[in-house]
Length: 63
Picture 1 (cartoon, helix red, strand yellow):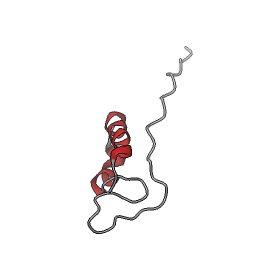
Picture 2 (picture 1 turned 120 degrees about the vertical axis):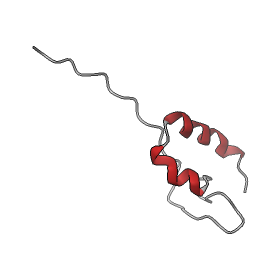
Picture 3 (picture 1 turned 30 degrees about the vertical axis):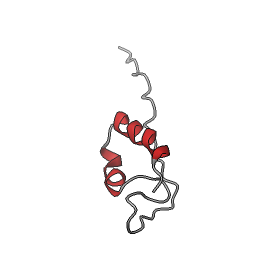
């Protein structure tokens, strides 16, 4: 019996990291990607809905 391969999985929502990983005192966001330390640390265990929510918020982050 021939097996049918499952459909390919869609790509995961990628990290906005640009390799400029710095959080300055008094600023809750990384100056490179605008995520908090908590968001950066949890990124690998977040589902795509959580990741999209953060990506939608990033343009509003000014600090």
